[in-house]
Length: 426
Image (cartoon, rainbow, N blue to C red; front, side, top):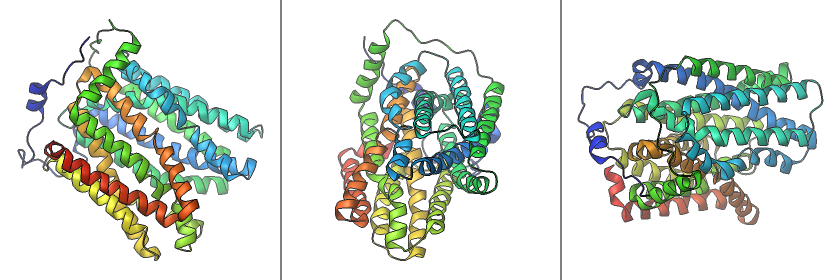
């Protein structure tokens, strides 16, 4: 069976040229004001993400308390990502066959159960490292199935016209949670204990379940299921390989996922060994990354299609890589904080634009599979970047690990936009 091509004529009509709507407001929150479903979804999701960040901090600290072994701390983080490599592509096939809202609802309910179990076992003192790894793995499996459906569902909440704005606002919610969640976790751990980070995360899932229950979407038109899941997966892979724009954007995502992550993974080492900072200073540096990312997401939502997105992607990709190289060379905390602010801005701009451009290109009946592949590349490959960065840092030093990755990333971006100039015109 041939893979359907993107509906060029309808998408061209739905995506006006940049600058064609000069009267459009610069309000970054207009997608929230305009679309009830997205407003409900965004509020519940952002609150839930705050709880997720709290749980992430608590899981790492709990693993350290249980084992006093940094390797086990890394393992607890890794088992949450490994299922993405194993299951996300198949989850994309499921997303194109089953109601996406239902998948997200069931997954969030399962994550509520996982968080509740973590709270109970920690609160009663029955938690052990084996049980913690098992529950973290279970959460990773659920996320691997849920993320492609959640990503692909955004267009159903806002339509094609406001898709990029909605993706940018989702990124802003993620980064707002990244700023608030760890700070709240520190307060809760100090005053109430580790268990209550998991309890509050469980309560946050109630908020997202309530928001999903209130969303009203038109009846779903079922896609043809004449092919087997394996053939459906093959169709998606053939489409992504044969569609030039999609293939290039996926390669960019892979390169930036692997080469761009070491600056965050190795930031504790850089803060301690290069900047002579302690844990508080490291947390402050992370806050600057989050603030920059939040500003970048809101800026992208504000400009909408006033600028050509492919051109903005090229600027963001080159800027992000160059900033990482310069960051690896600094020795003063103030300069490092300023560069991390810029890095967060450029990073989220690049990530959100790549996501938005992919979703603008892909036909609706392949959207779940393409977003599953995006999740596979963006989330699943990042541990490889962390491992490579750690290996280079051990052998040659943290500056080489961060700066070397940034330099290769810059060279790849320069080559990609030179070799495929049509990406700038998207």
